[in-house]
Length: 272
Image (cartoon, rainbow, N blue to C red; front, side, top):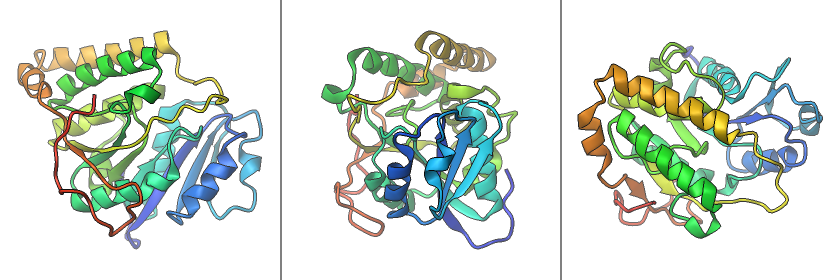
């Protein structure tokens, strides 16, 4: 990804596939936090794009459903080409609170060389049990391959610094669909770029649409990607050892915004 010589900005990127029920309200809340918003409509058939009419955003539309990875790549390329300093990503189904964007951006200012992740695994009582254990298994294996402990490897609520995005290509992060968010952490880790976590609530609305994540197929794809990475690095024993440490996490007050305070600075806590 290559940036052009334009003023640095923060973008929020939302990949969306059949999110007509939630997308407009979500985007309006995001606009209250950050004015530059990109939505990639991934071939929706329910009128997702039409729900965004007259909102001051950039809407990119895939002609057919290409998957989350393709949508993220398209939005990230657009943001970098328009002078992104950093890109916030969040899902379009309402499982991430736009009101937490300020908290993640504040930590991004404190740690400009790291990927910031909104981590949910500490919020176990709100997490569906089967998803909690699956996410914990993924967290361990991806941390091993990345070479350091990661608090929540499956959360799509993140802040990517432009310098990290500029280093990565589709050859570095080549798997599609839901594997992208796991693989990019491993690819960045191989370049010495780690993540820092901000604790966020696990939001699972009872009337939410069925997840697009296919547990058997997508978990198998993530496992295959991780296994391939580990084999190429001789099973990365140093990464296994380091992954057993506590992941880096920072507690930010819920009402914090850009420029607001953080509690006790760089802290480490067990997030799951």
